[in-house]
Image 1 (cartoon, rainbow, N blue to C red):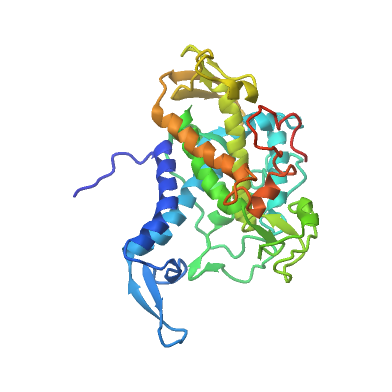
Image 2 (spheres, rainbow, N blue to C red; image 1 turned 120 degrees about the vertical axis):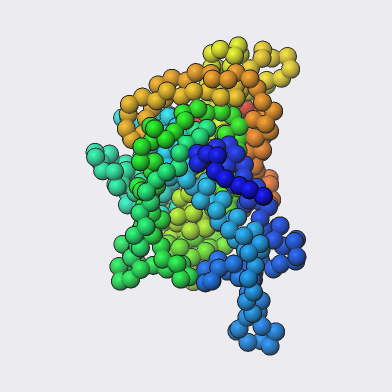
Length: 427
């Protein structure tokens, strides 16, 4: 077998599909192919690619054996899929900026950038990313010319709709970080296992595309949005379904009377389980994963609203959409035809670093079954996150809190066209 590079560009739709498959198939594949026990893999153990079988004599020792296939399926496929989605969601800038989100546009603020700043800060508060020392918030007041901390977390670049392809060339800062926060001190290099943490993990400035205009292909489409929603929802369920305290330790139970205070700035909620938790409870498995998950949910929410309102066509020549959610729900075989063209070209304005959309034009008006399948896959899982009747997903403690109204508007989940967006999310 011979393999060689044909292109180093990212095909976004295919990458997101592959990343979803890597996340959902890797661990089951490792378990079912040879009966491996996932607990016997350790991503921090050096050397890598080892299967660590506990000793049978009751000692703390274990036997090691190289297992490239098992480690790749059980550990690396899962971890790499996270890199892929974070890169596209909020690191590189290879998409339409979230300043163009229709739900962001409904928020108060003098400029689109101001509105997005206030929204991102709310999400970082809810995840406790500021309490943990990763985010440094200024209350949404614009800081002119401050590229290091625009949205509270350095280099964060929330994306509304990923572009069809991009050149991923960048210059990540591989300086070993002494601390990702000011709270943990600066005495020595941080290690995950024996691996040092690099500066690009603590701030994303060096992960932004260095020549963005030249590296992106500014074309969007429903298939890309669908697989993005699928991958975002897969991680969003994992990231936002759990809770942590102010010192980033896991929280599994909170008193019912305290649920409405979880994730609010300055909260001192005391967890029921574990009772030893530090005061203050926030959304997410950790402060960073909570930040990632809430951002992805907000991106999905805005993208879905944009898709329905603006990214359809009735004639294959001009873009249009549904006037309301109720109108979209009532669309059936007797309705005037409306479909989602497979690709639309985006012309950005000159606003930096978060351009506005100056215009949209249909590049290919055809409708593809793969696009529709991607949309259904992604948004079915997104709905599962928000559905309080769904025991496996929507009833996870973090999800019930996130979609109860303080972070994202609450809804009864019935297909009655009722809008949960009559008022902007509370600040």
